[in-house]
Image 1 (spheres, rainbow, N blue to C red):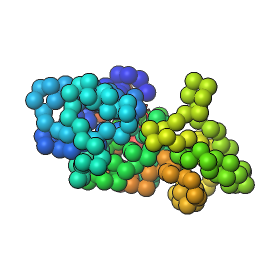
Image 2 (cartoon, rainbow, N blue to C red):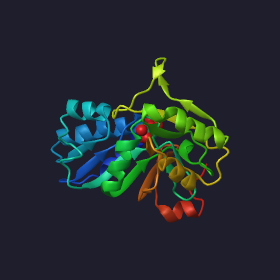
Image 3 (tube, rainbow, N blue to C red):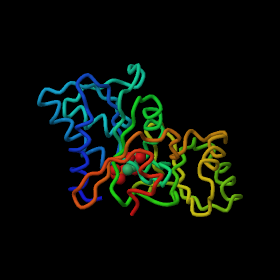
Image 4 (cartoon, rainbow, N blue to C red):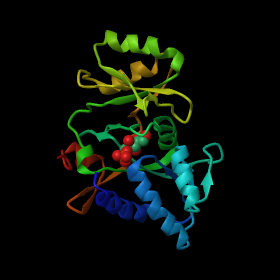
Length: 232
Ligand code: 5RP
């Protein structure tokens, strides 16, 4: 996504933020743009408390003087604002490209409202993945064998030539979904394996998605996508 599009989405998203809210702050480059705009909003006198879904997001929020609550301290979240990796025609979402899927999912489940920001490239007819699967390192051979038996391709996520480690100290397997017909069922099967902490298939669907095409922002809710609107 172009930086300009992210900025346009961030400026549109800030209009959803109201004084006194507890805001779930996602992770990734789109959310980073939003947090920059939120920092200016707070500087201008806006009052919110944020719940960060990653160390990276917490660090940016602190730098911008956005007050933070830990997930344990937050009794609830009013609104989550986050990016996504893919969304299909039924508003089914994949996330976790930035490796923060577990905390992002907890924040989404706790939140009264979920708003995702996505440019047109994130809209797909079929969720093709990769589906991030966060696992304990000890379970890696066992989970990989399960996936091989299903004939799906899997890659251990790496960063700078080393296994990528999440904020929770786990590994991520990126699973190709091209051969998977029923993604929700497959995600449930994965989740039932010992050693799988979470998958990037988000059962909690967004209330709204903001998207941008040629500089124009559109707000989509469930029925829009069910009718095929917003697809590229
Ligand atoms: C991080 C995520 C991100 O929201 C997702 O990967 C989108 O990232 P970006 O805004 O950089 O395209 O789920 O875990």
